[in-house]
Length: 393
Image (tube, rainbow, N blue to C red):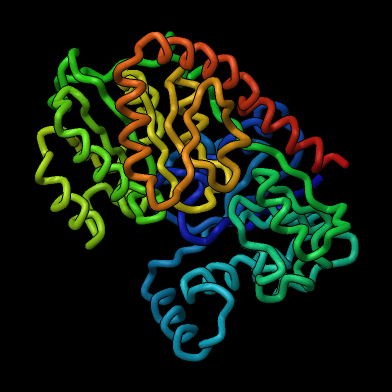
């Protein structure tokens, strides 16, 4: 079949600037190249980092790039900003979509896949013989979503990354038959502690005696980093407990700091000898960082749909402290994760959970074994097989 993919319109594919959705799509595209299943064309924003990328040599996948930073693009985006005050998405995304749709509609495709942008459907006149598949990585389609009934009607299938997101879609139609949850998957072998390289702790100012907590993700309030730093401050009597914060405000912008990151670093000054901010780390290097840690903390304060960071930590054999939000409880078991409620006592409970695991190495060992066992259900092989099974219907 011929398949067109409309990306989120922010980050490029291949995922040279990171991004959970973009890395996810890379997995599927590489599987398609390996098995030569379908003729897939990806419409992506351009970034110079894609030039010469090995994925562009695929005979099964093709890449059409939209230049959103050229002088002409900046003029047009400004025009959209001034003339489309009621646009569905930001004017930058709207510019990408209009340019991509202009090219896409000249071709015939059996399937059009919308990656996490259900609102695109409202501006698409889809041929009767073409099926529209919406892939939801976030809670972007529910009864409160603008145009939800029309988007739902146009969709042939709605793939969601968790049952939590599927249940949100079902608020539009409680008798839904279109939603198919496919939980995320990763390269579990790359993260396995026996295969991953270990980063030298001394490079980060850490010693072998330190008890290292790893946090990985985009640095934003909903990720719970402020609460995690507060929990670290409450553990000041335990100087060996160190926190490694990996990430940046916006994926690949490693050197850019926004006001939130600056506020976090200011807050952390009181315990700055126990916290290390690394900034953005490329995805292929992440297994080594997980391998130097003792536990992972994913303190999501929002309904995180199905975070990759949980799956990565699990595949690395790390005990996990996380929250009962969104799709997170679907990814782990009570044997390999401590699940906390995000109520008014959350910071205290978070500090207690960290201290408990620090003080009980035998429990960490049991949780580690359970984590590795549970990780086998979340391979990228299983993800790709499930996805293409839906497409092949």
